[in-house]
Image (cartoon, rainbow, N blue to C red; front, side):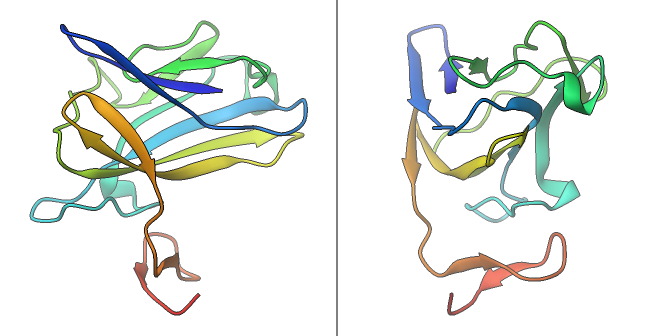
Length: 141
């Protein structure tokens, strides 16, 4: 799967790798809360964009070769967040989190730093999700 960002000047991408022959059940991007620079994964208040298959959870597109362009709704999908309008531009200089939920394949997920219009996939050391949804804090992992 390829995650893609576009601006009026350029088109930048990075790849999120899938293994297997699964289907995309949902795709989400989380952004930082006001006053923070790093997104909080799985926090509903941090969710900035989500798409899901129109025909249902198990009816998504095959992940092999799938291209996801931020803010552009893939064919066969509906946008759940935001529930109306288009996705807001992501402010540069911050760390975002993406999660691609799949059926019949392991999910793809990770953090990326938006450097201008260039997404750079990064690791955030020492940041682990606790047992509670939305409760993310630095832990010894």
